[in-house]
Structures are given as structure tokens and as C-alpha cells.
Length: 104
Image (cartoon, rainbow, N blue to C red; front, side):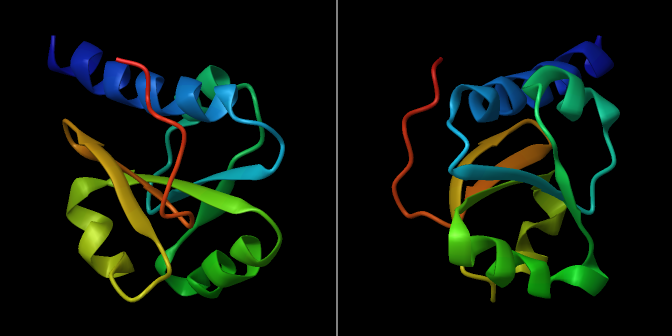
């Protein structure tokens, strides 16, 4: 049951990203879940602790959306990202302060 709920949280964030246009870049931070690519139906940029500089680079041209485990959010506190929502064990962040609302 727990795995289904965890997948549901990733599904919600991933399909939200799918609903956004090409001016948004979907990424993950310290998270390797192939289901995100499947649900989002778009390319996903993987960002790791060693490639944090990519956040600023991606944000120069488009709005960056980041899915990460909630316990990793603190590692991003110095990055130009805003917390959009937390669900279960995951968090959704964006380089834009205001984002279209997540459908419930």
C-alpha cells in the first residue's frame, strides 16, 4: 500500500509537469525514479549534489521544476527555488515564485 501512495505523489507531480508547456524544464534532484519520465511524458534533467550549478543555468532560459525527496529540500535552500508543494515523501519546487495551481 505504501508504494502505491508514494507512486501517487510522483504521479501527481509528474502529470502536473506534463500539463505545463515547453517553457518549463522538469528535473529531479537526488532522485532516480524512471516512473517520473513515464508519467510526465517528457525529458527529465537529473540534478545531483555535484551538479547544483545546473539549477542556475537551466533557470536562465526557462522555468525549472524540481521533484525531490522532502529530506533533500534543505540542500537546495541556497538555490533560487521556491517550494510549491509537499506530498508524502516528495516536494515540488520551482524557479518561479508563482506557478499554475496543481489540480487536486
